[in-house]
Image (cartoon, rainbow, N blue to C red; front, side, top):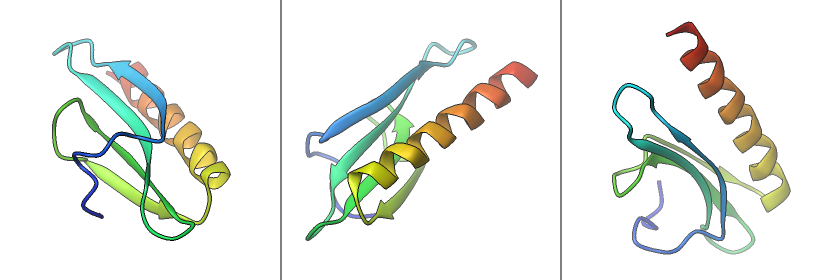
Length: 78
């Protein structure tokens, strides 16, 4: 993970409210370095739970969509 915790995201891809705790899980794209971007998912104001360096913003958007689908599937099983 790069040190972008305090920077503003380039784009917020999605937000999900966790029903049991009402915490907000957010997935956002941040500038990493050069042409690369970093996709992060985590709870608002906290340390990212997961991140991935991507070569471009379009690839990051595709991965964000996949992560959102995974989160939805997990919530449906709960």
